[in-house]
Image (cartoon, rainbow, N blue to C red; front, side, top):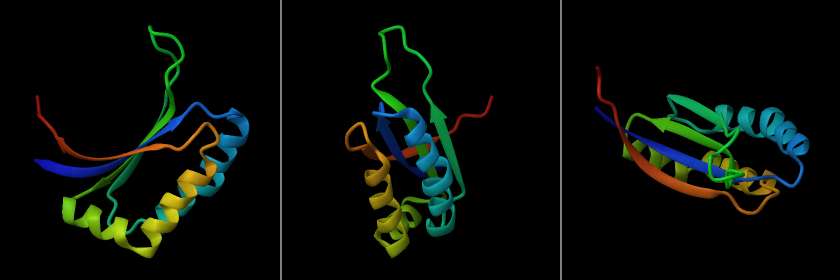
Length: 107
């Protein structure tokens, strides 16, 4: 089964506590409320890397049942508002935005 997801990779913030507060209290509630069609949000916080400090502090995945659903959400007012907020809270530079297909393999 193939689904679609929007991936947002946030660079290391200038102040982790300020970023986390904005992310947890402002951004995630906004995304839940305004991203219509999402099936789940997976928020990963990187802790370490064998190559040194990871280039990304948080990697967030907003999952959708189809690419069409993702595209409709991204074009919506709520999608644009949520993306603008992601840019606003990313103090370490602009986040990297990616659109991907996810393929799951049961085992």
